[in-house]
Image (tube, rainbow, N blue to C red):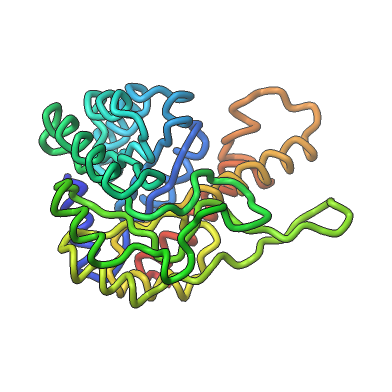
Length: 306
């Protein structure tokens, strides 16, 4: 099976993007792998600090490794938004394929210093692990939002510049870069006046020209975080401009909860967790089915299979 960096290079060459989807339990993992195998495309499984603490880094690595060995499908594991060097060390030791050190909330010079330290630490444990850094703050939580996160770089003057990106990549030696180009973590929603119910609202538009400028300047693949809530048109344009990996998390969490609520409402007497979360024989919508539908839709779009 080819490596993650090879999967990303192939995506760049073919003007597509590798989908990155977070998990915190087994039903979502099954759904993501099912969708990727159905479309025969590579996929990245992500665990944030909180998700990794819940699942266990060693356990997540064993899970992904077992499915790769069993199926031969290109499924990769990423340590998403590590902000502590001990967690970087743990992820590299556990066998993660890539690690994101998130210093985006720090001052630029401090971000460079700490990211460089993270890169050197991880590479000393596993020279083949891909290291990603972030420049530009876009928020921190994959959740439903009433407003844009305070301090998020969504205006052109606050976004990552080609000059900043170039300096950052040169001084840290990261393999991948996540710039701030108009995206935010989480999804904006409109709540009803009575406080009950909500509808999704469009996230800020991506700055496609800035993506293109940064990619041409830095010479390493670019990653788009905060993909939930981004329009399909922006995704396509961003991929053509230079984005090679796209992260989706909030959409999956919403889908999982929607499926769970339907399952519990329609089957009030069901108590078996595996039937509530991921029984593929059930005809009604459950959490796994809802997550599968989101992942399938996104992978079709990212790989131009629509």
